[in-house]
Image 1 (cartoon, helix red, strand yellow):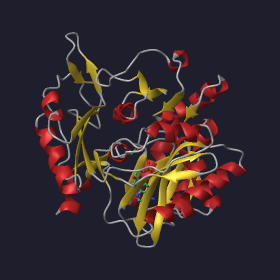
Image 2 (image 1 turned 90 degrees about the vertical axis):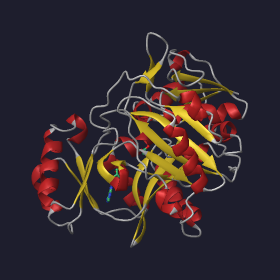
Image 3 (image 1 turned 60 degrees about the horizontal axis):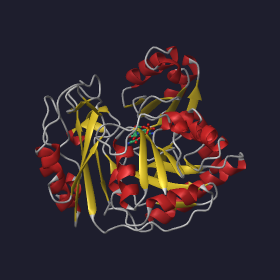
Length: 407
Ligand code: AMP
Ligand code: GLY
């Protein structure tokens, strides 16, 4: 099969690698100079048997609809289903109607009622932009004054522009987070092996939120029956409610979940594979990812995913200044040495080529360094050994990815 992957980051590099491992011919648009098969050709001009759309922004803007209207086979929801990520207020209303467990919330366009609602919450406040904000539109705090100021800034449009003119305010939850990717064909879903993502920039979950600084899978500490529970209490009711609204959802339903003291709750849905959390799941697949995604895109899901039994640990190597102001143009050294570590894979995420053809930093999250091994401890050693061989000025990373499960 010829597969066209849309996007340019570590997730798309991983999708391309895993698809080509199963014998598919892969073209990535626009990709980046570190992803084999990257072309600058617009997606509409690429002929392929299957289109896999990586990031949320083109999905929210209807790329899947436009390609389907041209008769193409597409893995990714249309703009209707993409509202699950494009509007947090829409998502919360839908999941609440569907009976999915999630934090109590309110949706507000005006300061007065928003501040009144904040006052009813028991000391742990979450303020979110309704619209897309590249993972940065969420404030979690125990400081009421900080939450109030954030509400004012968001609603005034000063902090996040129009994305913040509606806010969702939620009761804060606590507990470990789990990422679950359900491959949906509109009617049914297959849930992939869960992963954990590390969102804060610094060790011990300090510092600001990022798109994700690392991930690992599998999760040995999950309760028995976890995946079945997710399927029956979260994914199936959500797909049923989408169908009730006339939405034929074909793509990834990415559930961000929290294991709270009151039980499992949904933090959010995304409409795409997580980045970098899906990489530690997809790289371990032994079944054919292309067949799985093509069957979902065709509305006839077939195939149970199988895994190689290994563990995977991914550490993001970030540019100087990430997440606030990542510096571009630093020359990346040591890529080949890192990839030579047995079990290691290096995925290029935020990279470009300079005039001399060298790879340079061109984004916040520059590389995903993935280690695999028979268990998480071995995978972790592999990832950090590979990472140690890579250098550029100001590079930084977390040193505690998957540390807790191995100590
Ligand atoms: P979201 O973009 O909705 O995933 O939020 C980003 C991050 O903020 C999540 O991964 C959580 O770590 C945190 N978060 C979001 N909602 C809540 C909540 N209701 N309680 C506690 N933390 C939350
Ligand atoms: N790693 C979090 C996300 O992809 O949204």
